[in-house]
Amino acid sequence: PLDAVLPPARQAAMLADCGARLVLAARTLALPAALPQLLLDDARIAAHGDADPGLACDSGSAAYVMYTSGSAGTPKGVAVPHRAVHKLVVNNG
Image (cartoon, rainbow, N blue to C red):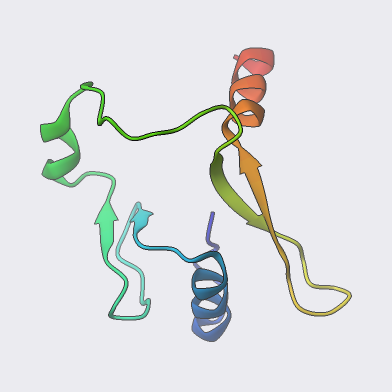
């Protein structure tokens, strides 16, 4: 998750740090021009349907990256694996 109220420089630093190749967003954000954005209501998402995209992924693969607050210095990224997301959904579903 990327907080839209963060200063643009901090957003850019976080995106560069985690190696983001695409931003999936609810609305267009002012981000570095070289980084493509795909809006949640984009017709391209609906066009894919529920078909398996054929991407390699296992329970240990990173689902997303959370950043620490940076209270002791520079914020650090922590990769959250798919198994943690699955457990969260199952336990709170």
